[in-house]
Image 1 (cartoon, rainbow, N blue to C red):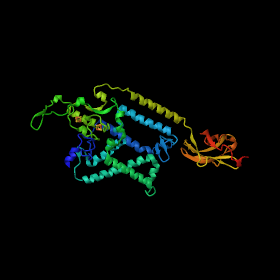
Image 2 (cartoon, rainbow, N blue to C red):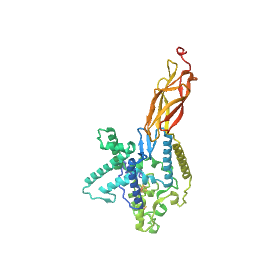
Image 3 (cartoon, helix red, strand yellow):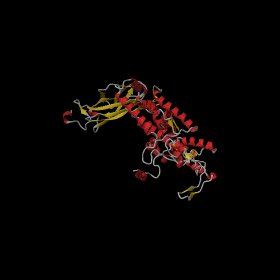
Image 4 (cartoon, rainbow, N blue to C red):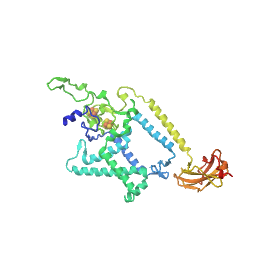
Length: 480
Ligand code: SF4
Ligand code: SF4
């Protein structure tokens, strides 16, 4: 069996999180202190604080960010986007995506290493908890009480996961609702409790078990790197020219029968890399940066901090591993201005301009007429023609308003069965109305109406056109 496994084993490591036999390779990265770790720690804690605080901070009377998926309303910085704002939301999404493309083209995977929630929580919450209770690589705690420490570690994971999952959910249900659910009995809100339970479970699965595999095998952004990066993008990279050949002072290598198969490398011929593997031991995704840029590299710069400590100790210049571009590391000159660095900002400016223009010219309400179901029209005894129409109004203002609807053209057409609609701030409502028109206004079975919609706050007044249907000719029994 072991022979079979050996035969099937790949020639080189396929995934940094898998052993040769396909089993999980558990990573326990060594913590490397340095300027980048300190800076990332500050950024991470600011982000964790901001992420936890945002749902609780009101902005113009609304939550700062509220993604109400059930009602398809999205609030950003107090501004609510309604389901009718598809174009605005699409422009916002384009702006977000292109910004990420631009940042990646300029600074590589800075998002992954410095700001992605997966990295921030894993490296600055869950791994520190693990190190605190059971010790990290290179600093294992004494074996006694290990079982108890493990239990405490998972209890701490659970507490953090509950907090994070509730913070996450509050973006979708609102902090006030969440607070009510938390203090209420689960029996009063079984669905909400179920969602919280599942989200906490997913957090535990991710950060206690799946961990860095999210970055290595799941994240689509990692897979787009080859398209998003170029030779001038800033990445964490090993200076091969300076570092190789690696190793300490080496002796000649001999084979089994004592023949010299490689000559010793003189110390003066060696590069700066002493092959201590500290950069590998510290990597949270388990890769060796000296093999070149890899999909698994999240740009966290832990290997930079680790190697700088080694360089300092052996009296060599810092930066054998550093932030640089492939072009510079290969001896070329950096090109800051290149096609993608021009095209992405142009798209950004275009999308943002369109967004601001559309937002500033948005009316105070959106009105939509929808033809009623069933027969397109009815003919009354009086030969008047009726059409059932649903009117849907979205109040885009920050105050409740009452809307009246009336037909101003052609003369003789009226609306029946309709009471003015009172709609709360940033809410949408719809109501059926009956439009009654004399047969004489129809031409070829249809007539276009001018319908006036006005609110009682003086914020909105518009005239919309809408086509109602009627018969091509009156049936004989109804002909006068
Ligand atoms: S930490 Fe630096 S010196 Fe040590 S193996 Fe890595 S690159 Fe070489
Ligand atoms: S190679 Fe270096 S920068 Fe990349 S993930 Fe590993 S430690 Fe972080």
